[in-house]
Image 1 (cartoon, rainbow, N blue to C red):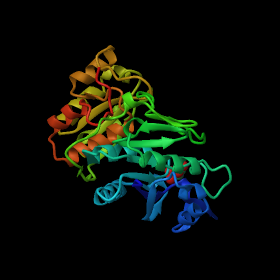
Image 2 (image 1 turned 90 degrees about the vertical axis):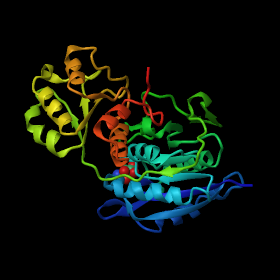
Image 3 (image 1 turned 180 degrees about the vertical axis):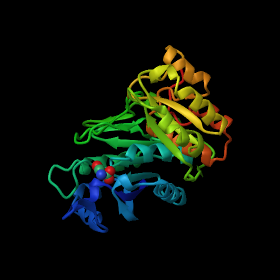
Length: 337
Ligand code: ASP
């Protein structure tokens, strides 16, 4: 029996066409473009259907509303399909992949996000291989998790980050090995793949909890951020230097962090360096963060940390529980040493 894959087309460069205001997605165009790719109908391909989301979006415009719509669609069709391919713009693909990895609890089927840097309507589009190979992966039986396929590499979705604005290998997975490499054949890295999940799928939709990301820089005046950090936000990801260091020995920041934590805000420390992990306490400059109640994001990407905060707050956990779970590996998003 042929495997069945559902393609969920959300927008993004892959299906965009030229308009007088630049590239934009247009309803119906991508389906026409697919008709011109004979490989999609080859005998070796899984059987597939496509649904087009409305409205089609440049992924810069994606919100939790769309994440919920995509996740709901997967949950609704979960029993009818063996795998899913989500066609998505590259700009926020790593955020959506991270969010889906948390929302789709107990996922046992492949969910592969892909897109392209060059639209299908142009020559040299990378969309063709990204789509065909993603379909083959989604129609195979190796993957039981949310992944991102791009430029010949299969990455764990919540480990991926966009790293090139114009290269055809647009994503990296700096702290976790590739799950597969697509050369002449698709070679899976069996040891790195997630194990099969038992117990069935459960969908956790996300609520629009106020979350923020703060990137520290030399000369940052933390006082300017105090009211947002202590009163408005429930979760903050601080992108620190190196292994979790902040400027000024934390003099200005620490009282703010303490106050934020008292008010229920969970602060997660990630690094501005894509590779390596936060290690609170290694330097004096980071030790204070730990004492003030910040959580170490270890080697999580900012994208995964943001999605995880949304997820944990949407599950209704209190701040202590959110804090504890931010430091636990829930979906292979962090490396616990
Ligand atoms: N702006 C586009 C998007 O993210 C870029 C892309 O798809 O590559 O939707």
